[in-house]
Length: 436
Image (cartoon, helix red, strand yellow):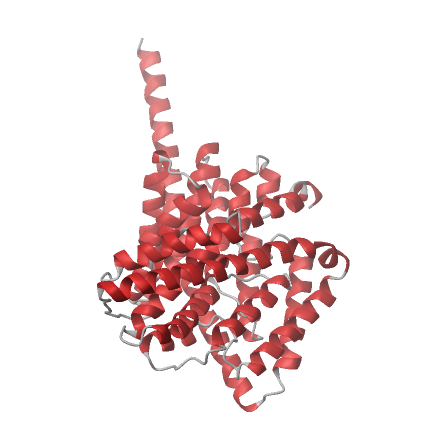
């Protein structure tokens, strides 16, 4: 009896030590996610600013730097971190579907995380119309997944807890939107809510968010606003922004999905020619738009919402095209920030239909309508816009617009963009782990 009791105590202590080791590894990973997201945000802003400064005095530079930069990034991605291309969110979703550790390791690794971060900074340094938020999700999921080597995580936590928590923490730290991070993981990445991983999501988001706040301070992504709509104006604006935002957002998603599939043979046979061609297209669009479509579009969108940047009527369609060409080139890069920027420009254009309504309110409805049309996650879209602007007065109009845009978008694009891209990515990545 004493021996049996002693054995049970040893087993209990061992399990306790193992549990604490998993907790410490998980918490450390969440802090590292916050640090990585913050460093990427700071480096991306610097790179974006440098390119805008360069082209002000050198109008010819984009025709050399942009295609050359996209070509270099494509070469580096293929040579040194294959699996790091694209937005990053489809890759994180695909990792949840893969059953083999070798396959998951081919798209979730520290090597890919570092390479993807460098590629985003280089992409912005050469004027590509890309965002860092989707790639941050991929980077965060890679960091969290790599923790399984430090602690003996059960398979459930490896496939769900670590990857989902990493994705949620990455988005939360990138935008400083903790609620949106959790909702995105539930609404987009998992498409279902699992109570057993709820605590993991929350802890990762809190730790990553606090780390980011300690470095950058408390801020709202697009600033603080206060806007209201009269009931009569709200109904018309909801209908217009919801329908047009859903149609254009759905069109954007369809073009990326279909274009990506049609260009797959070209990308395999002539990846560098494709990167050069798309780079030249991005350069032409940027120059024709009077240098307004380069980079993330963050400053342009912020200026529209603050009323300091009177966006030209062609800004939204030009940014739309620049983002499509940037993504189809195959370089790592997200569509979150460019889509929000296009939505703000779309809202600005639509505000002319409502001369007695605040332009800011229509801009926000246009932003959430277009973004919902692109990603088809209306709740996440509303939470992101509210948390990024610190404005809750438009909650009901924003929600109604997002739901309408989501329904309209599904008529144009029948499958959510990230789900479709993850399935396409799965076809190309299965067996990659064994090959590498």
